[in-house]
Image (cartoon, rainbow, N blue to C red):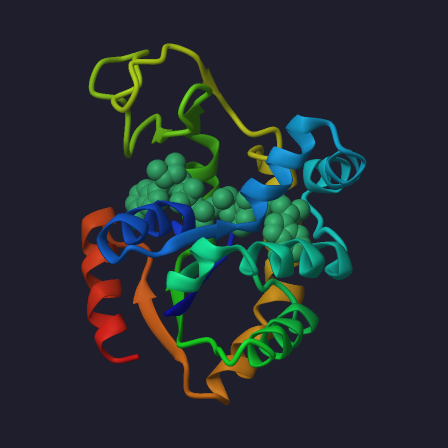
Length: 216
Ligand code: AP5
């Protein structure tokens, strides 16, 4: 299966992709995570991407398309993927379609997480993750069971993303509205879009996604 999770920053794409990875044996491909890994490794591509990400703008299509193309060619992607944060422009959606057609594959389902933009600032402002294992948390909605200790690995160091601040968030939301939302008609025309209420609690969003997948 090739599943796209679509929604603005903070809609819950990463949260739901991680769960689907476990329940459906799919591989989460997050272009944001890939770019952050490149930046942490200090590659030329990563450092250029970091500058753009810190401003909340979108990284050039050619760079992203090349990166995802290589990733889709790896053997684990053959069992099915959840695309989290990709495609983000009509050009990326068209490139994905062509790339998959060349492999005899196609997008099976696009889940749109519908959210209220005003709530997203709180979600983003409260987000942090474990520096050791990457497990994600939220100050209010998902704190660690023991304060200051990661539930998953026992790590005690946490990090917040540099682009998770109200000012950059405005640019990220603008990019979503102007450059990413226009891909919805592209997939609606192919009958692939299923809407889910991203404002519900995490478990409820998960069950709505499961129900939507039955209709894909
Ligand atoms: P990326 O890393 O993809 O970030 P994003 O799309 O802005 O999405 P987020 O990771 O911020 O949010 P999410 O929807 O995954 O929410 P999460 O589950 O974490 O992209 C970053 C940057 O990289 C871009 O700005 C761009 O520069 C670049 N980039 C990446 N891909 C690109 C591409 N294809 N083309 C060009 N540039 C690209 O949830 C957020 C918080 O809310 C968490 O704390 C979580 O615990 C909480 N939460 C989740 N669900 C719920 C719920 N139902 N109720 C309450 N709280 C919830």
